[in-house]
Image (cartoon, rainbow, N blue to C red; front, side):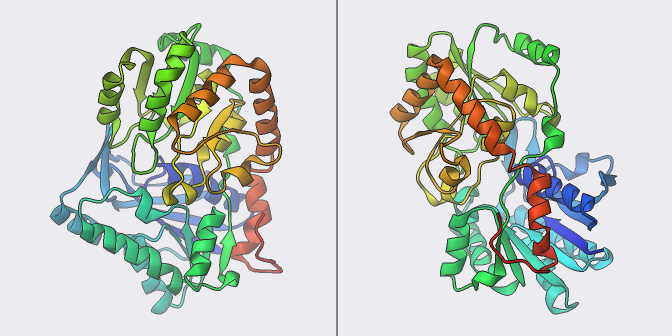
Length: 408
């Protein structure tokens, strides 16, 4: 039985932790692997229990992550304070790696804290080290100064060269890694999936209660469910588009679910655009309730620009919309076209074009036939993208027994 230790720099309520690393770990346990996760937490001092077992996965929160999340806001440390936070996180992750039995060290994202810990385990203790690249880090992170940006860029460029194997969830990242001179045999495509456990059947009464509590009866709900952070998610584009939607569909309302560093800024932007009475921001919600909010929606949106940040991201909200049977709108950037299939289980607007996004939303809200077709196609497409199926196909990445390195 292979023992694998994940070293991740976020908690299991954060997007990649909740949507990628935890379900991946859970399915690997079901396949016979022994999985431990050493992780950082966004509000470490508030934790009552820092070490526990969840669905067969050993989880150990070891230190504070590089940001702190309280309420609906994400807050950043001063440069000096961040230096000490980072150093402490590196040391605590290293201690976890030294004290946790493992055949493989799996670095979740090429960040300084976990990368340095993993590389020490490789070069001193001869552990096999994998790296997961699930974002274009230089494009999606918030930087307070040029030095921070250069450090993250350095690790994103150098760490893939030093590890044994790399997994990635987009072909954009795979192509970028190949252009860096990394051999194709070292890179494995491991796509994002959706967790059956999080999106099980939800009682209709509960959906209607939340709908009523939010005052959304008889409303046409346009939903964005995710991080309220402009560095990776241009919610400002969606707000601009919704000005036109609100005029064309008077009973429509924009539901923004989530928290982030730009939460207050987006509230002010809605006011500036004169649609604050048509925009409902719930703030951060418990992860177990996410499925309910999808069920309330009549359409789910992934606003994007045609930039490297979008190309390097495989949107979990696409899969979550499909499993929740909600029509989905995005743009044909990066792997979104590939994931959507043919015919596409998504409606594509022009990237970065608020008018095009507005027209797509209006089309879905105005056509039951189009909505039903998108739901049908999404339901078919997501069947291949549940985490249990993905890991059953991709488990050989971690054993390398008769694996052809083509992924799914």
